[in-house]
Length: 256
Length: 150
Image (cartoon, rainbow over all chains, first blue to last red; front, side, top):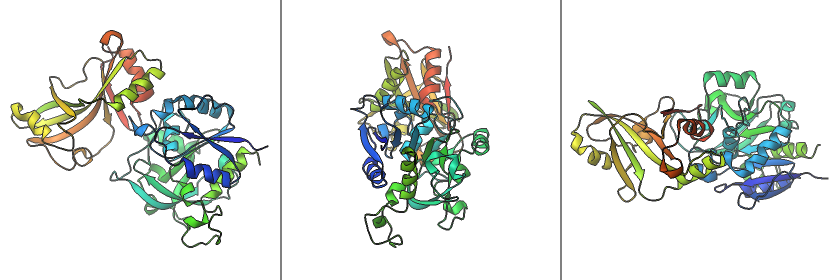
């Protein structure tokens, strides 16, 4: 039996439809859950927090959403071992909720995805996220090959990882750096990083490996029609590219 | 050069302050009202009598249709108030002043001010401010908070 995935919609979320569609195209039984209608989310087996501008980024990106009622169940679920996957604004919410890197108390952030650097500006750029951990370190990446390079779009004004030197050291030492920005061939250098992110960070995982927060959008490069070179086939609606990460997530949710 | 501090606040309903209020109440804090303002710390060589007009001339931070400006007497948060500063180096003129300057002002820095009120309009206690800072208003990875604890 397939397990159910809740795709959370906060006021201001804007990437829920493509996220939902790619989850379904990858075999997931996913549905949207709107903040205004949500009762309890405890019946769901996994949670996805899509991109957008939840609560209009008031106070800070992700700060208010981290206190939304829906997050009570997401946090409880994460603590109990359910899979939680945040993309872009969803990743910011997971940081503000303290679920990643997860080195402090809940709802006491120890890091931030904040204003891009060196000059604050909105970035919309095709990128590759290179897996920087052993795939099995995180349940959501477990089906990916070593050093997988996931194509995606960085589309954010606040995606730079920032933390104190001590907290950054904690992230490295605790193997929380799940993805780094890279070139298509896997090379890692400053030119591959679109936003000045510390450690070249594109994604973080918690200690237990069941919560993953990534800034770029693989769902915006998740079907053949997204790829101009059609390198993965001519079926324009076939999932490909960024779908690899979604497939790995769905497999993990379904226990495959 | 004289240090001056001004507060720019909305005179129309402040949706962000209301959102903060509801989030703080979800945290079980005894807060009935929240006011938000931009606090500008200025090194000013100009005439104090014209300070307000000179700041109000910067359209990036002041719109007479929706803002009001107060020149503050002190240079520290008022009772029941929290000032949130961005940590690290940044260019205030470019980021917040729209690249423009303020006549007579040689340096400007910005805080976000949050005034919290409890029941009967009393300023929130130091304990409430501390909990609001720790739980919502300040991410210590990128911000610093200033307030009177008592």
